[in-house]
Image (cartoon, rainbow, N blue to C red):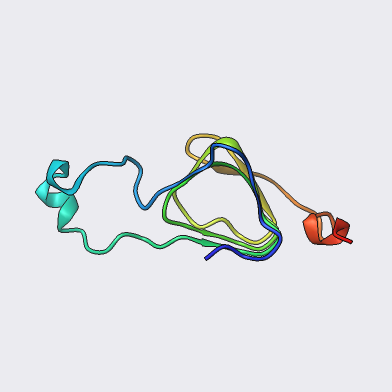
Length: 100
């Protein structure tokens, strides 16, 4: 699911795992881990990153080149590989506040 007012940069990759492999190339152990994680992107989110199966909270900002492998809390600013929280977005500064 992708929420309202989500900005997604050119070249962003959404995936259900870290590396894209055909099923026959995956190890038995990887195939037996169960279903892949889903992808959930909240409202008013800015993304410039590689995003695996994860939940991205409302108002979050994902830095360019960041690799998301876990949940990103509401209004968190994350960057890096793997992504880490580097700050917090202020309420009222996102896309919805500037939309006319």
